Image (cartoon, rainbow, N blue to C red; front, side, top):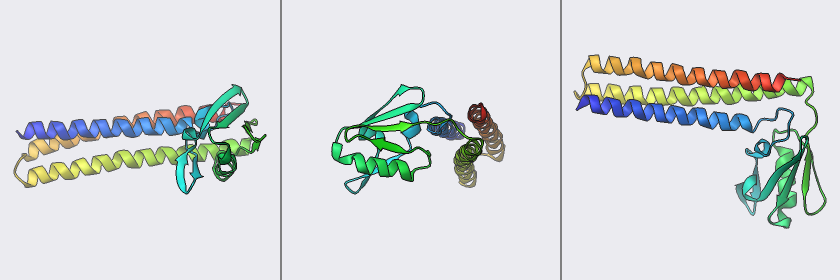
Length: 189
């Protein structure tokens, strides 16, 4: 009985931690490295009729060239709001529009901008570590409750905590590896 509950808690922890890592991997894709990629604009939300709406729901985003992104809004009246959202974001790109299409030139990254982006990426990675630690904390709390309710022995609880720590360390290691690769990608000239 208690073994099944503990296994369920550990499986849940693994799943939630893996989702945190995947979320951070996705966020890393939205940080600019010097090549144009539609994923750069994934984090941008546009104030569309009073509602914060993800840009990719309002427009088609393409990268026709290595250093150019184009944004084709579905609703032409949203062009100004899209431009404002891009300018207010941390992507560091200046939009220009011709009334139908917004163009974003992706300049070469300066050394200073590269260092700023590394800080942004490190901050994103730290948020991921915190999310993973929060999952561990929640599951540890649940394990202690099981022990307190007499549904699990202290040996079972200890084994589960050791296993949980191994999972936590593995996921944080995975995150650190992603961070290392992203930093190399950003600093690559």
